[in-house]
Amino acid sequence: MSLSSRSKEYWNFFIGECSRQKAPLYGLLTEGIKNDPYLSALTARARPGQPMANLILGAVHYLLLRGAEHPLRAYYQTLGGDAAPVADPFPIFRDFCRAHESEIGTLIETRITNTNEAGRSAYLRAGFLTIASESGEPLHLIELGPSAGLNLHWDRYFYRYLMGGTEHPAGDENSRLVLTTQLEGKNLPPLGATPQIGMRVGLERDPVDLSHISARDWLKALVWPDHPARFQRLEQALEATARLTLDIRKGDALDLLADALAGAPRHGALTVFHTLTTYQFSKSDREGLESILMTASLWRPIWRLSLEFSGGAYPLKLTRYHDGAITTRILALCDPQGGAMEWRDEKSP
Image (cartoon, rainbow, N blue to C red; front, side, top):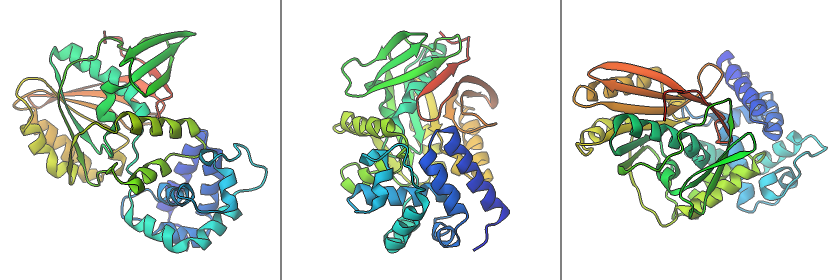
């Protein structure tokens, strides 16, 4: 199976992302998958719009997490493996895929990459404090693509922002989850008290039911094994939110959004947010999202906080819609997984 130019572009982007995110194992494996007709055909069984690399890599990680015995385990740090193995892992990876072709194929066909990186809450918190300060109102939150909803619980975590050897703490000191973020540049983000939160709603096509072990394992499987600290952080986040409930509505986010906006309490800063979600949207979906927010802004201001890949970086953007007018600014440049942030918005408190 030969790759189209679009497929080559996708695989090359993912390989580059592995380099940027310091994930050498997945970089090597992805390079091999791209050039292997058998594995390329296997990944092509993914649903339209789903990232093929994440699915095949996640499927293999999932089976290993659930106890599949194979020499490949020795390469996964999340399973106690070696961070820098000597041998080329790809032939062993391919052998595992051959041995578990049916299971992997089913996972690729039926699962989606609904990752949930709680580390991004360190950026979101700063953005939400900015909105609360500028609006002077409680926050009403609607998340697009929340997965299990870990970032909707951002006010239940404790944060350690590090700059120049100094720690700047924020958030819930009693939380089981502590998020550490390195601050780059010269500016501190907002670090004040957590603002009042009214409504919290998630709009998710495939909600993650954390009461099912298989759902929790799939969430863990989507963490790259080169990032064991992220894996541990996810386990802590799941533990910290185990007894909390959320209003997560099942369905297409664009089909549900207008009603969610209309049903929000009358007083408060109505905020839509999303992290690494709209890259899976079609052009018409992105235009549809913009149209819904513009229409809603005719009867009240709408805030939008987003972290998406743009121009080779991951900017945290704040957009305000009001009476059909739009203002957008970049608050920060971020590592997509929560590790580092450069706060650029000098207007913020």
